[in-house]
Amino acid sequence: MNPQPLHTKPSLRNRLLRHVLVPLAITWLLGSALVVGIASYFTQQAFDRALLDDAYLVASHVRRTAEVGVGGLELSLSPQEMRTVLFDQTESLFFAVLRPDGSLLAGHAGLHPAILDPKVTPHFDAIDYQNRTLRSVTIHRDQPADFFVVMAQTTTSRDRMVQRLLAFSIAPQILLLIWLAAWLQRAIENDLAPLVALEQALERRDARDLTPLPVSASTRDVQRLGQAINALLSRIANGVQAQREFSGNVAHELRTPLAGIRALADYGLRHRDPQVWREQLQGIAKSQERASHLVDQLLALALADESQHTLIQEPVALDVLVRDAVIRFLPRADAVHVDLGARGVEQPVSVLGNDALIEGVLNNLLDNALRYGLAAQGDRRITVSVVDAPQAVVLSVSDNGPGVSREQLHKLSQRWVQGSAGEALKEGSGLGLAIVNEYLRLLKARVAIQNEEPTGLRVSVTFDKPPAA
Image (cartoon, rainbow, N blue to C red):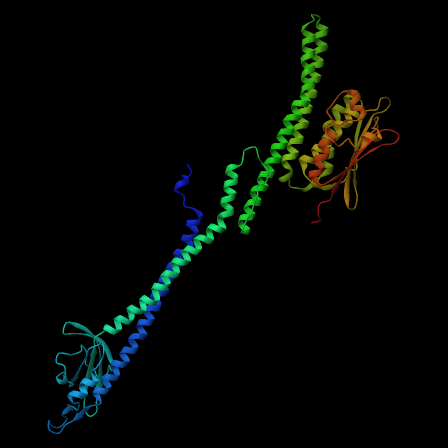
């Protein structure tokens, strides 16, 4: 699946603005509509109350008259008084007094509501009169006799008040929303400025420059992002450094065995004697074995450097690993007449660690002992011991070989450092104990190297016990 082109993706600034302003605008619109609706309702209630008061005022002037007959009614308002009742500066008022049958008693002809029901009073409605829509109220009175009063009014003031209310409530809010959008845009740009600076710093950075980036963050999230990028650069730098060290070590250390193989081959090619060929081929095989062993050790060191961030420690059966290692090295020990044995593995012993790393420790310790820990005469012994102490477990590999001098004892764990036996034999590269030391650092175990009495060398490793279940 092809990634989306960069120019089609929205910017983080615009997305944040949209996520903030769109819900805010919708909320503002709904709130404004609610406010205007409520204000319009109460405004209409006020106008309707005034219209109802005028209707009651007209109804209070309806009188019974004897001239018309029993039950006759008349409106006892003079024209001057009627003009006073109907006076309004902005609106036009109309009224009609109707008999129960709907006939006009007084007022404006044609002003007739849709409903004349004594049970529905007061009744507000809209009436079409003289090509205008009026707001009307109809009331029923039964004293001095049954009659209805209809009072109607134009809605210019009402509409104008609602419009003004709408303008004065919405216009400032629109200006406030525009100001808020501008303020948010500036604030978001200021908050994203460190992120832009981080992006520009990454773009300008050379591929070979893995130093930490300067992070000036105004927010905790950008600071964490900068720290994560710097942590990634640090891990990459460590990996690159490990690769450089590995390639440099390989180039440096393989030069000698490869040159020896080339010299042996050249020497054999210059002779016709098959015995000389055999001797040179044996030398080539031995040099190849040394080179392979060196490559394995260098790879082990490189893998140890890379695995320090992903190592998971768990309970490991140390007695099983020791027995397997002794069985694995028995043929090689028998070939050089070495008594290889193990002690303390009769009972299960668990330590906190990693199977592969502990196996690597045992392999390197036994390999070193079989290479450099052989006695010149007499019995040759190599013993792997496991001591289950109350607080820890001690694994040791001891031999009765020549040991090392006091000056070399504290340097044996360093890379490319060999003891006197290794230097005399012209074998190995001084990486065995360095690998052991690196593995134990990852396992958080402790190592101690000391000479045995009367001769020999003991390497002791102290492991933590797994937590109790």
